[in-house]
Length: 76
Image (cartoon, rainbow, N blue to C red; front, top):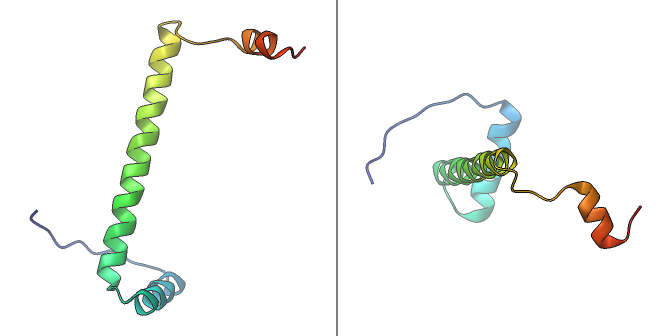
């Protein structure tokens, strides 16, 4: 996979924490930053997909009402 350079500004505290983690893990700061960004993007993509599916299910009346759930569980 081809890579491209990307720069960003970090707070001094975040930069120090990144440096400490890199030193503790034997990884580079770049590796840790890339890993964190990729994990964040995966999580956000999953969450957005789940929300969109939920909206689609509601639009298609494909859901269980809270009253039915309460009834099934014997809750008033």
